Length: 103
Image (tube, helix red, strand yellow):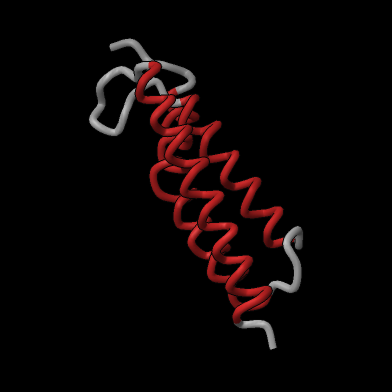
């Protein structure tokens, strides 16, 4: 049985892009909506860093979520979906926290 020295890093990348990254984005979104007072606060910067980290982690994973080899179409679909949904979520959280719920 051949061992892959990078398999631990690939497993961490897969864990991040599938679970930890989206969970962190959800928590950061709630935080932005509840207590931020501006668009580019540390919480917003953290959101954007995690968003980019999720994309980088996805690109470093050689398999898709079904265990098949990753194709260029898989990566493009993930990139477009993640950036689109992530930025819409960030804008909505900032509008909610900075304008609609501002005290």
